[in-house]
Amino acid sequence: MAEQYLVKRTDKPVDWNTEVPGSKSMTNRALLLAALSKSTVEVEGVLFSDDSRHFLACLTALGFVLQIEEEKKKVTVTGCGGIIPKKEAEIDVGSAGTAARFLTAMLGFSDGTYTIQASEQMKRRPMEELFELLMDAGAAITFLEEEHHLPVRIRGCRYRTKEQREREAQMGQGFRFPMDLSLDISKSTQFLSALLLIAPMLPQGLQIHITSEKTDGSYIRITRKMMEEFGVAAAFDGRNYEVPQNAVYRRDSYIVEPDMSAACYFYAAAAVTGGRACVKNIRLDNTQGDLKFLGVLEQMGCAVAERPDGIEVKGPREGALRGVTVNMNDFSDQALTLAAIAPFADGPVRMEHIGHIRGQECDRIHAIVTELTKLGIRCEEEADAVTIYPGAPAGGVIETYEDHRVAMAFSLIGLRTDGIYIDNPGCCRKTFEDYFTVLDELTGKKS
Image 1 (tube, rainbow, N blue to C red):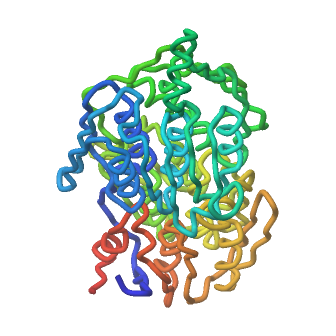
Image 2: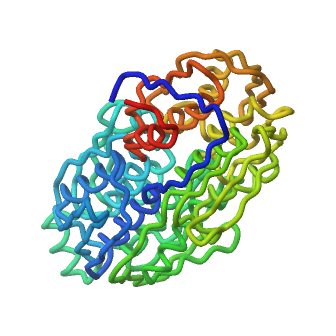
C-alpha cells in the first residue's frame, strides 16, 4: 500500500451497501476458548488481520494444533483441556493487546517457561496490574527491557522441578492456587477478561475482587457471554467475579459476529454526508459494546433501522448533525470516529470518561486534538475528556501514530473535505486490512 492515501471527497450523499470482517475481539477470545477446551472446535467467521495472525502464530508456537482455512474464514482448533502442549517456547504478540494480555495470563498459570516478545507499540502499553497479579499468584517474571512492560520471560506458577513433583507426590500434596485475587481494571478491562478466560486452568476455581471504581464493561460482558457459550458461567455480584471449580470448556463450533467497530465507520459516513449506509449481517442483538454508537448517531439526527440484510443508518439532510455530550467509557473505540465527524455538527461535541484511551495503540485523546487542530478545528483537551467545536476542516496530512483506528476514523473527514491524506494507511492491517480498498470501491476512486 502507498505511504499516503488521498481520500476522495464525495459530491453527494453516500448510498452504500457493504460488509465488514469478523470481530477482532471475538475472534481472539474464541481462539483462546477453543484452545483451552476439551474438544475440537470449528471457529467460523474468523477475522484474518495482523492481530489475529499473531494470535494464531502464538498458539502454533505453543504447540496447539490448528487447521487454518483463510479463504473460508475458518480455523479448527484442537483443544488441550487447559494444558499448554509445549513447556518451553517463544511467542511474539506483535501489537495485539488481546494476545498480549490473554496469553500472558495463560502462560502465567502454566507449568512451563516462556518468552513473550512484542512490537515497539505494544511494549509501551500498560501491563503492570496483570504482571503484579501473576507474580503474587506465584509466577516468576523477568522483565527483558523496561520493568512492567513486554518483553518478558515468564515461568508459570504451576511450574515444578522433577524433585518438587516427587516430593509433593510423596507428601500427598498438590499445588494450591490462590483462589482470591484482587485487580484494578481502570487502565484496561483486558486484564480481567484474560483472567476470566483462563480460569478453567485452575481446578479450584477463581474469585476476583475488583479494586477500581470501574468494575464492568462491554468487553467483559462479551467475555462472560462467550465463556457461557463454551459451557462455563462466570458469576458477578457488582464487585466480585467467580468461576466455579473444575470448570471445562466444550463446544463443537462457534461463529464470530461481524465487527461492529468496523461497521461504525460506514455508519458515520452516512451521518456526515446525509446519506445512507447498510452493513450486512449487523443486527440490533449484536453483543459488542460499539453498538451503542448507533444511539449517539440517533442523538445527532440520524435514523437507524434494522433491515432483513443488516442495520441501515440514514444521516440528516446535508449531514446537519447536532452537537452532543456523551459518556463513551463503555464504547471508547468509537471516540475517534465521533471526533472525525464532530466538526460538522451544529454545536460542540464532548466525549467524557475516556481517559483510558491514552494507553491504547497511541494516546488517542492527544491524537484527536493534535490532528483536528492541524486541520483548523478548535478542541479542548482534558485528562479524561475532549471537546470539539464546529468548524470547516482544511486539507492536510493525518498522522496515524501506527494506530488503525486513527487511520480509518479520520478518513471520514475526507468525505467532506478536499485534500485529506492518511499517512501510513497500511496500519489498518491490525484489524481491517482492506479498509481502504473497500473505501475506494464505495467512493468510486480509481487506483
